[in-house]
Image (cartoon, rainbow, N blue to C red):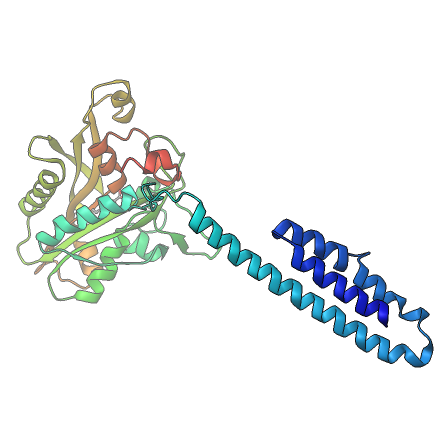
Length: 340
Ligand code: PHE
C-alpha cells in the first residue's frame, strides 16, 4: 500500500517537472506504457495477502485513475501554452496570400447547349425534354420507317436485351411525343438531349453525342420559314461573316429534306481531315415534316404543315472553337476542359 502512495507522489512530481509535450509523452510511457510502472503495480496484486487484496485493488485503481486524469489535464494545459507561445512569439505573416478557392465551370457542351437555348428562346421556341431510352415504334416506325426499311441503315443502333427497346439514335422521336401532347395546338419547340449510335469512334463521330431537335407545326409554315430560322440561328451563333450552305438531302420523316453545313474556320491539315476535304462541316439535317409523321403526331396534313431540324451541338462547338477531335468532349481531360 505504501508503495502505491510512493508511486503516486513520484509520478505527480515528475509530471509537474515536464516542460513540454515530448517530455509528457515520455512520462506517459514510463508510467502507462505496456511495461510501465502503473501496470506493474497493478500486476503486483497477486503478491498481496488475500485479506488485503480488495483494499489494495481499490487503492490501485484510484491511483491509476488520478494519474491518468492528471496526465490529460497536463497535456491539455501544455497544448494551450504552445498555442499561446506561437501567437505571442512566432512571426505571423498577415501579407501571405491566402489559398485560392478552386472554381469549377460548365462543361463546353453545356455552354453551347445554353447558348442554343437562348437563341431559340428569342425566336419563341420552348425547351421540351423527352426520353433517351426509346421504343422501335417511336424511334423509327412513327417517323415513317417501317421494319426493314432500308433508311434505318442511316442509324446504327444500340438495341437492348428487351425486344423493341433501344437507345434513341436521334432526338427525332421527341417530335412524336411533343406533337401528341400538343395537338391540335401549334408548336414551336426545341428538344435537346443525348443520342447514341453504334458507330466506329473517330475524330468526327462518337457513340454518344447531344442533339437539339427543333419542331414548328402550324398553319402555312413553309420551307422559307425553315431557311429563315436556320439562317438567323447561324448568324447569332457564328457571326454575320461565317458562311453556311444548304444542300438538298433525304430523311424518311421530312419531305423535302436538307442538310446545313458551316465553313470550317481554319485552313490546315486538320481542316482537310475534319471536313473530308470540302472545307464544310455538316451541323444539321432538316426539312418539312412528312405528312405521315404529322398524321402520326395527331395533326391533319391538309390543315397543318411544319418544319423540323436536328443539329449536333458538339459539331457546333467544334466549329466555333476549332476543336479538331470530337472525342475530347467525354474524355474528362482537364487540359481540354479548362480552356472553356
Ligand atoms: N434525326 C436526323 C438525324 O439524326 C436529323 C433530322 C432531324 C433531319 C429533323 C430532319 C429533321 O440524322
